[in-house]
Image (cartoon, rainbow, N blue to C red; front, top):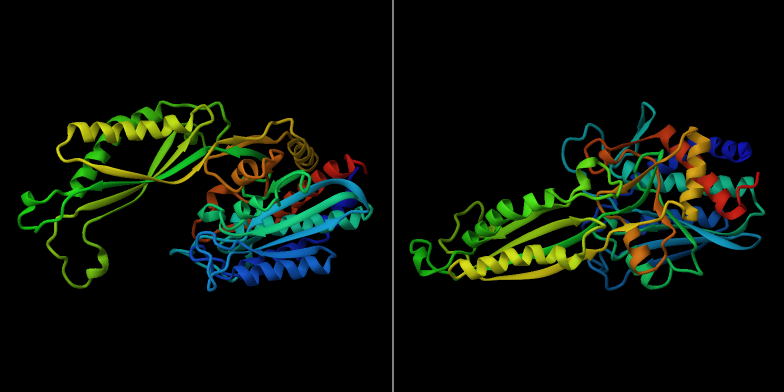
Length: 425
């Protein structure tokens, strides 16, 4: 029924590879937010040539936005020949730092052995390229389609998405009646549909002390030792309790079907800026700990916070001179789109046709920009689907398979056909 559409995708394989490599060559590293504008302008120029109306939108006033590193997003829209729903493909253009251990140039877009290598190849410039190719193929196969198609390249997903999807959602870009269905081509494997993600609470805990001379620590109060007591209490009481919590959400990998907490960072006492000299002999009067707590659909956020605060309050009661401050950094509720939602069924139809098997329905262990579409845009017909293997994200020699991208583009194209043309041939 969709042979013509799939042939249009297949014919664009070389273009898909070239587009992916071109996107990788923009070193859109976050932080600090390098090359956002030229990457957004590149996407805008391509889509404008295809007849899209294009906007470049800066997330002014969002974290990290400044004249040197402007948070520039691109949103493109093509209206069909008659009224109908709008399908929106959203991809983030920012990538994490390359790090060490690469055997290829991380920003060269190297093509070899059926793969495209580079930072962001998997997460998620391969997905962005696949969605663009899918849209262009669909428009060629069915030029009289009803409704509208949107494509966005947004920033800062790796640091929370506040300058990208959150900012745009606040401006109405991810809400009805402007948009009806959203597909985010994150790398969750080509035969999986990701329905949502666990919740997250980031917080900074600071233990307080009193500065004194390091040769007479008894005259001060050591904030680092107080933080040691916090860590010991977490190990004894909190981590075992979290490990006992299980979810009915189909989170992958299986270890993420429990509640988890990561210690992101700890800073206390003498800073490292004394190197290569010697530290000053002070008793530290402050120690800061950042936590990354991932929680389940079955948990309430206030209960998640209470578990930590109860431990801190217990130490304040029982430990001499213990005092603390706690500051929320980010909080996001878990989200899970229903399996009978239109966008889920449309993409499932594509997976069935391309792979001849039912999709696996999963939940991401970490959050992505679906959180902002749901909580700010109040749009719940949203999933993540795209090429790439999640385990490769953020690693050295990151890659995306060419055949995986082609097959995912076919699935996306079929999904558009179902959503905009009710699956007609």
